[in-house]
Amino acid sequence: MSQRCGWVALLVAAVGVANAANAASPAHGAPAPAAARAPRFTFYGLAPALAGFDLARADAALGQPLTLEPGPLRRTAAGATAGASAPGPACQYRAVAAQPGVRYALSGGVITRVETRDARWRTLSGVRVGSTLAQARRAYRKRLMVAPHPYFAQGHTLLVYSPDRRFALVMEANDAGRIITLRGGRLPEVAWLEGC
Image 1 (spheres, rainbow, N blue to C red):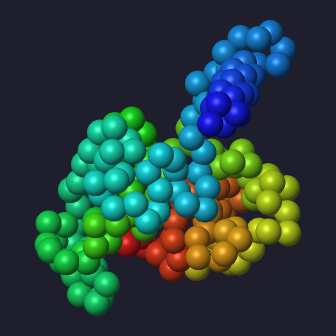
Image 2: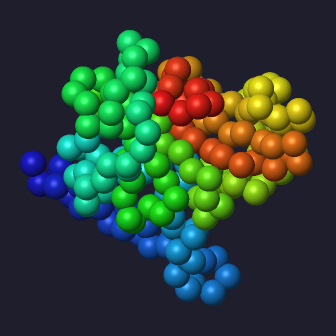
């Protein structure tokens, strides 16, 4: 038992050292800028509330409730329209003050996708709203799937699948070759251009 406690203490110490090293910049040992510590978009959305979380789990992870965005009627899973307060699988958008410019799409009370049009947020590979198509290609290389965007003459949709192909990171580029939106979440919802 004491040997096990010793390993646990060693592991806790190692994690503490690693976290301290990650929080300091290599040049001067100063804390990393807030932007460097901010969560980044992945296949699963934006930590700490990810695609697949129900509303209660998302609120707990964020430390504050996701508030309902007022909006027009949204389609349900059956294709009909319903108000944001309608029961059942109606899709709704929610947001939280701690993540300005980020929207959470929920269907049936579960997060399906997380999206932004705000340049403050980046992907793990550093792509953000305002990045160029060329930068996205360099960042994701062979993993990036590029297709023509149906709403732009020269625009593109960009997609990077998760390893199990159940989730994806999606970006949209306009006619100028600039990323205008990025999102992560489960398929097929994350690939829908019109939202939920």
